[in-house]
Length: 117
Image 1 (cartoon, rainbow, N blue to C red):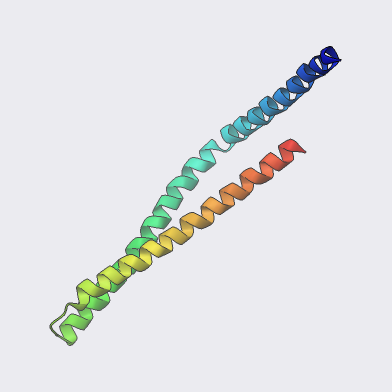
Image 2 (cartoon, rainbow, N blue to C red; image 1 turned 60 degrees about the vertical axis):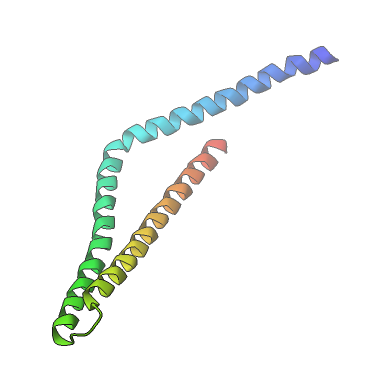
């Protein structure tokens, strides 16, 4: 009886291993087909994230300079609004990155589901 169990186990392991190798090969082929697209997409995302931080920071600094020149006081509006713009910009960049990360995770989950089906 032990021989029957051992005899069945290797063939099951081989089919599972073959399925895993097949799934990995399919993912590699898909990655090679989309490699050019992903490079440009990555560069575009870096630019988008950079601008999503830069624009609020510059707007905050500009508004601060305007307020400092028209309403002088003890405290610097420029510095305060520059920091506020930077914080808003970083939050904005974090939002974009988490959204793209979720999209990539969903795509990988769909690919694995298709491979296992």
